[in-house]
Amino acid sequence: MAPPRETDLYNPIKRLLEAQGYTVKAEIGAADLMAVRGEEPPVIVELKTGFSLTLLQQGVERLTVTEAVYVAVPKPAGRANQSSFSANRVICRRLGLGLITVRLEDGLVEVHHDPGPYAPRISKPRRARLLREFQARVGDPNTGGMNRSTIMTAYRQDALRCLHALAETGPLRAAKVAKAAGVGRAQTILADDHYGWFVRVERGVYALSPKGQNAVEENQHSIGALLAPAPDPTGPSPG
Image (cartoon, rainbow, N blue to C red; front, top):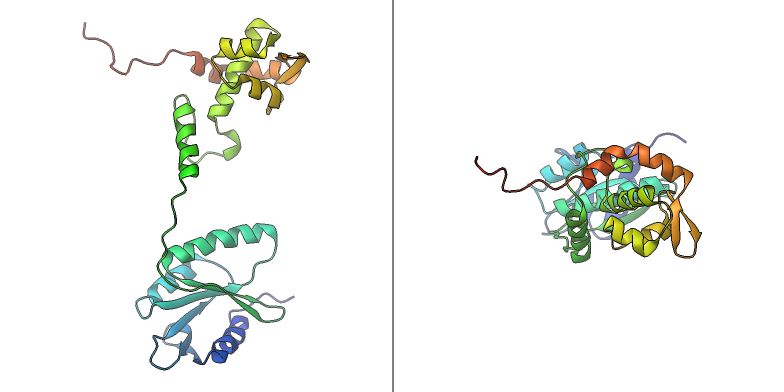
């Protein structure tokens, strides 16, 4: 199948607008498509074979001419493309741009949203989750922009405390691990065994798995940082 072209989008969108009573013409000034209906503000559609910064920049620039600006791209296929499309759709809404897709196989046009002001609703549960993670995490063990798979979360810090407690004492009841490690959710961490570090040797009693024994050595630096006393925020007293 030949790669899509911007011109493949034009006729399907033109037919849709003409069915709604618009007169449509291409390449008016810098606009790929312009449609006019009576005394209404003109509609401008920018056509591209995929999302790009250039497409968004062009759309924003056209907003200086009319509020009715759409960007149009081929309809995405595949789960990965759908995820990227959803993110780009949010960007379009934030910029006040309408969004159109064209299914190239049969020319089906879909208007995903019209232009207009958009203000996202604040998600209080999501904000609360972030604040809980911020408050529970000890120190600042990560560097902004690092790979997500290597991030030290508050959950991992608690698991490391449980790891250390079992390494020091050997098999132990979950309640005693919680007390020794200072981790209230130790029972859940041991039972879930997200990292493969723990093994249940009998009801309510846990020990380190072979992977957990190796993890003690591999995570010595992180464990040491967790066990180190917090610095005095007031600093040393003058002497």
